[in-house]
Image 1 (cartoon, rainbow, N blue to C red):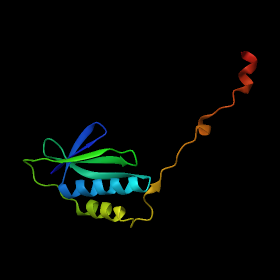
Image 2 (image 1 turned 45 degrees about the horizontal axis):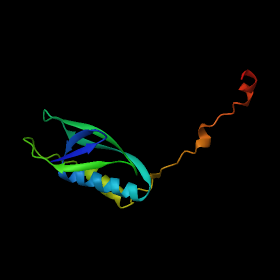
Image 3 (image 1 turned 30 degrees about the vertical axis):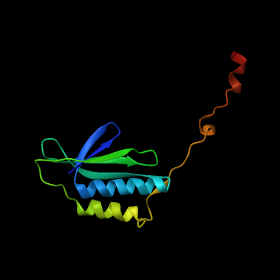
Length: 116
């Protein structure tokens, strides 16, 4: 099992899932892109849940090996999807990150000048 540290939290998932997620995050960074990825995780009580990661050029992921009393977590569909995307095989994803200009947040306050 692997523990993924992300945005101040950590999640346990299968080895192959974690490696595929890290590889996809690396691909997105190299292509200045972002994407949202949903993966299975193992909760502390052993049940399986889901976690959604927003990955992009500024994402910081750390993965570390971790023993578990619960079985390895597998999801072939997620691993194949992440690997395909990492190879650029999904044309609809990733999308380039759009930078916001400060002009998008500028306002015309000239009509307030009479109140000053």
